[in-house]
Length: 381
Image (tube, rainbow, N blue to C red; front, side):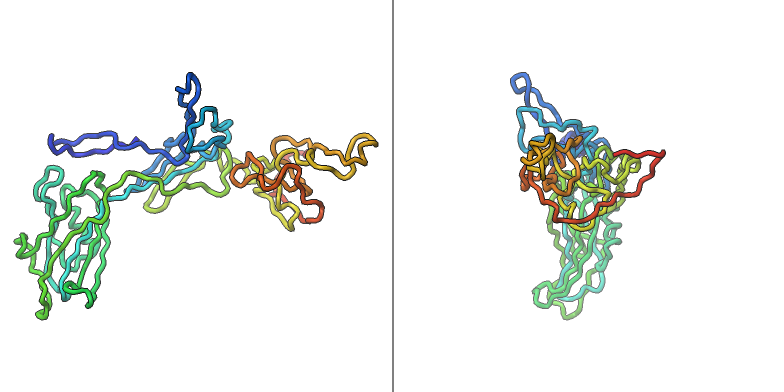
């Protein structure tokens, strides 16, 4: 839940109120039971940790990517939740961004402005009348402009960018300095525009803006609103490539500017190799050649194709009867086979390759695991 602190103009005080409800694009629940009146949430632990920095927000969901058996855009009337979210969930971190109000202040004339200063003010903002900035020099840097604005009592934090141009074809204002101001702290629906004042135009302690004697256009200042505040929207999903189930990704978060450090408290305790191939891939194994290109094999594939000479008694050996691989779990490695996992879900096969599909013995290659230690004098597999 997102709450915001806002000023109640008619009453003259501030209050906290519910502003929006934040959900990831993986949010899902089913509706079934008691006449389809019960909502059954898919547990992902969204929001168990979060970190905010300025307009950026990171929210962790350690049980996300759990093997949803339904469609997040549909409300199924049956149980489409994962089999065991806490055990199979890999975890994701969702990045949200809130667009700030943006105003552009432009100082302009037909010639270069060589001297002078001005101020900006709000006529009436958050109950404060004539909230004035510090004096701003005509050639102010972005840093100095920011410091002058943040002296105002109702503005909070801003971010300022500066642009300068002299375009002889842009009449009558060929010379322009623009300061792009982003209101980082403001979450109000409406942000009043700056009111510029300068010498001869409402500011008695500002220095006169001076230009060349050739100038025919007096210096002037305009303010334009180019962006308005928006609620948090999801802009990215963060998940490392070597993530596995129960890593608890997002168990801790740190955010520094545009850099994030994401904790995965159970990841370091696990090997990066899939020893039983139940992840549906060959993580941690090094391949050569092409024999293992479509491995591991999903399901009891050999049971659905003919074999060399069959098995069992002598009568069946000439018939090529199918033979079970006697696999345990979903996957096994058999370089004769050609029925890999789906790229979308390790829980399903790639339907491009039908049941019983095979590549034969022509491909060759090797498959080498990561090193491991045998703690004892035996190994079985």
